[in-house]
Image 1 (cartoon, one colour):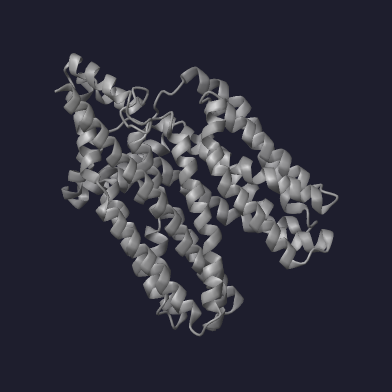
Image 2: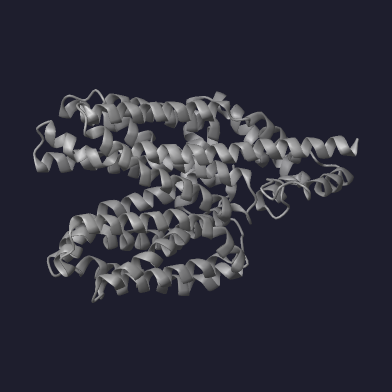
Amino acid sequence: MNNHKCSTLFQKARGRTKIIQCIYVVGFMDLFGVSMIIPLLSHHVKALGASPTVAGVVGSTYGILQLFSSTIVGSWSDVVGRRYSLLTCLLLSALGYGLLGMSSSIALFVLARIPVGLFKHSLSICRALLSDLVSESERPLVMGHFNAASSVGFILGPVVGGYLTEHEGGFYTSSFTCAAIFLINAGLVWMLPWSESLLHRNGINSSNNTSKVGHDNNCRKSVHNGSHANSNHPVLAAETDPAYRASGKHQGGLMSREVSLLQPAWRQLSSVGSKIHMVASSDMWDLFLVRLLMAIAIMLYYSNFSLAMEERFSLKPKVTGYLISYSSTLGALAGFLVGPVTQLYGNNMPALLLHSTMLTCLLIFLYAAAPSVWQVLLSSTFFAISTSIGRTCITDLELQRGGVQASGTLIGAGQSVTAVGRVLAPLLSGLAQEFSPCGPPSLGVGLALSAVGLLLIRIPKWDGRGVTKILKTH
């Protein structure tokens, strides 16, 4: 009997591992398809007869829609479940890219960007799903691998897109190829072994017999560390408590999410509004402010990189392109370092975030004051690593403090904050370039220093509170 139970746990762990591996593939293909299109958008808009001003307004449509929809869609995924929200986002994104392939006028181009701007949140929902499936201690490792897989897709996509563009109708071919990729991703998500993961989560919630829980824990020790049943997981620890189950709060789990899609639309909207309100009224402003400051600082670093290399060191665009590709490749590979570095820090994410932020600030300063290309190369090498670790750290801290059951809302809110940075960075970069080619990174140093100062003030308060959740799940 005991052997049968252990065997069942192994089968459920394998099902969960399949989901994680498939999500890596979805992340790779997602950014692979998107990066085929991104470099071609501005050229296509101009080819349709748009003036530079109109092209700028059209180009900002996507960012503005993402700014307002990120938190809403992320919260909606907490309400109706990851499966159906992810499928919805993938299918509507495929529709948008398909319409883009048929855009023969500026009006059609704008129409095609609307569904993509509203529902291109598949990566955020994938991250929320991964946070549902793994323990808190393993979350940085899994998130790092996911970011690495996505970054590799973002590196390879422009190569294929550039090749297709050389042929007649290349932009339309690239758009339809991107739409097909999103449809394939939707098929992968639909075929994932969701039931095995759901049964595993439901089994945990129903374990009110103490001896049964003890036996299951012994069996789980032999299961791969990716098991969602890790006793260190804050949400699962609460879910195994009888009082917690009686309160009905465990309905935020995976099993109930599959059912909640049947709720009336007004109830779904009410739940979404409630979760967003909890995030807005929480004291997580410090984390979101650090995210905003560092997002703008990093964007300022890259904003005029090619122009600055040409003006400061007379570097040809081709060589600058090699340097950017080198940095991007290191950023992708750095995703695999997140797990080991986190273990080195003993899962002390506040300290790791502080140190990575300080390193990023130093590297931006070295780039701004670089007397030679070799110093730029050195700063670019470590900059890609520090920013990759920093992004994973701040996402993990948001989930620790907010609670994994609101992971979609939290990740969506983080993406909205980053979208604000995308709006502000070009404006600040343009103003700073009026003074010097080194103006944007110099301003980035100031913003990064502000983030470091904020962390030095706030981290002691985080340590005093530990991993106490700010959000209460309804």
